[in-house]
Amino acid sequence: MSDRRIIPPSIKNVNLEKSIEVKLNSMVVDEIGLFRPVLISVVIPTKIDAGKKTRRKELKTLSKILEECSKLADLGYIDEIIVIDASVYGGGKPDYSVLTKVIKTAYLHLRLFRREVDLIASSKAESLHASKGFFNFFVKVVHQFDPIITKLLENKNVFKKLDVERVPSGKGAALWLSVPMCNGDIVCFIDSDIMNFKKEIVISLCNPLIKSINNKASPKTIFSKAYYKRLTLRYESEAREFVFGGRVTRLFIKPMLRILSNRYPDIFKGFDKINYPLSGENAIFKNILESLYFPCDYNIELSTLYQIIKKYSVESIAQVDLDLFYHIGQSVKGLHNMVSQLSIYLVKLLEENGITLSEDTINKLVNEYLNESKRWIEKYKLIYYKDIQPLSKGIKAPIHYSESTERERVELFSSIFLESVKNRGYESKILPAWKEFMSQNDYILLSSLLKYRVNQFTYDRLIKADLVRKF
Image (cartoon, rainbow, N blue to C red; front, side):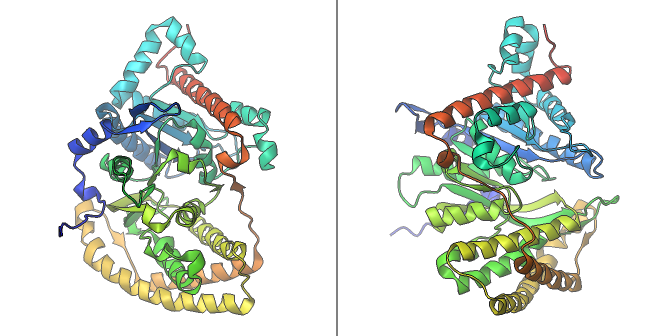
């Protein structure tokens, strides 16, 4: 018997040349039964509102991500980049300037996209073609609240079926909307706030699925999910200061999932094995994605996990070690909203499975959480002094950590949990799986129309960026 160890997926083990070779030689069967090369779409949801103090940092970070992705595009590893933005002005009007910036960055750094743009700029026929959405750009940009997409979805009765008047706000809604826009067999989602992003992140996430295509043995990997140690740039800080990040994951969701997995194993079995339940970096087969429902809010990552584990198994998930992340933090209010929404979601999962929590049980859960979190605080204190604090010298910036602050935060999270599940002042909007609320023919038609519109919107941004002109 071979004693070869199975090496878990890690960014440290990525072999760039081999990964590209394997991807380029991997085949899938298309709709009419013919083999063709596998396609990978990278989707980047963004929201960088006008007037936000971190706007400059976030735009710079997004540009860096596009630069790194462009290297993979030129090498043939990724086949499409879609940036879907939800930035708005103070009054709620869509702000298209972020996507204009994206287009300029892509033109500057991505040779394939630059050739496409130059072709359109030099040809009246191609320009006319692109203006109608018939030119399939490599880099595509679209706004979540684009009025033409709103009108299209309204005309196809999508809003009527969903009982909404427009595309909802929230990251989950952006991801849901992006699904029929994608051409890839594999869709890789990347958050736009990763300050130390590098191209190997995409490869690390997609490689387990590529391997799954080429290896017919089971269990088949259908979903890969990142985990990492996280440094958070202090929200809207004038100075370059970091804190030991992942606070909601480390101090709330991990200990709470450990408790729920022990208490209700039929519902939460496997959740305690997930290293970073709230990571936004993942890759998934598109046909699986089309069968998932999408909460519009902070529950999107946890919901995806729950559906994958329930429909398939925790063994179908590849957890990918991305080592260390530097990212731009959010406001304290945002963190508190996240804890509140996650709390309500967890309790609703119990209720959907026939378990109603009494007030006494809720109080016991809170006490268990407070006790369990103490162990996690000790665990992460060791990690901080061993792995995080030494990084300060290399990044030439202070990294703030306080055990007393961690304990205070746990107390606060427990209060938010208690108040949220008792009062239920918030109701999450759930967007259904595309395959479930539309017929196959209607979905194919809508997908085609959305793809045309995304290409048309991209052309409009090219004009705004003065990279092409109308003939």
